Amino acid sequence: MKVAVTSENGNGLNAPIVGHFGHAPVFTMVEIEDNKIIDVVSVENPFLQGHVPGQVPKFINEQGANGIITGGMGTRAVAFFEEFGIKVYSYSSGTVDDAVKMLIDGKLETGKASCGGGDHGR
Image (cartoon, rainbow, N blue to C red):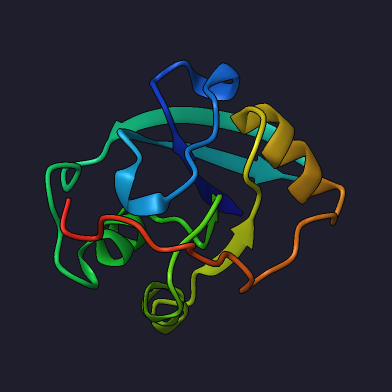
């Protein structure tokens, strides 16, 4: 499994989680096999200054991810990710490492990443 985690910076597993997927400066791509992390790569968000609906899910899909962990996103964004077969996991605090450990332990819910509003034109 390869999962993208919305991150504040490129500090890999130590990067703090970002609360809204479209505002994440970095996506930390974490590859997991046999419940172990085997690879971590930080990828800058090319749509940080603005995106149209569907661009970020398409980009995450192009990175080979089949999951995304984020603090929040709207229902429309969840639908875009699901169209690509990408599961959406909700986790809103801590680090990438914290989130991935929760995922490995089966403690993250899917499809529940909700957005409390905010600037979607950013």
